[in-house]
Image (cartoon, rainbow, N blue to C red):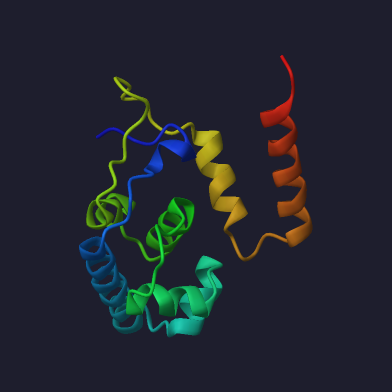
Length: 141
C-alpha cells in the first residue's frame, strides 16, 4: 500500500460535511473501544495522544471548521492501535506520495512525527526539533 512521503502529501482536499460526520463517528467508536478495551477515559486518551480534551471532544461531536491536522490524526490512530489509513479513508484523503510515487514515508520522518506528538517528550526538546526542521527547510542550497 502506498504510504505518505511528506506531510504535505497527506491531503489538502476541501473538507465536506459528510466526511465530518463520518470522522465524528470514527472518533466516537475509537474512544468507546479505548474505554472498553483499554480502560482509558477521555483524559487518558488525551494524555497518551498529546491531544487536548477539547480537540478530542470537537472531533467526537463533529465540530470541525476544516480538516483536522493529518499528523494529529495519525498520532490519535497509532496511539489507539488503529491503522491511520482507516481514518484517512473516512476523511476522504488519499494516503499516497507524490504523483506516480509509491515511496513509503521516510522512517526518520515518521520517528520525528511520533516524538513531536509524544506527551512524554519535553517541550524543550520539541522546540529544538522544530527549530532544526525550520532551519533545514529554509536554508539556501
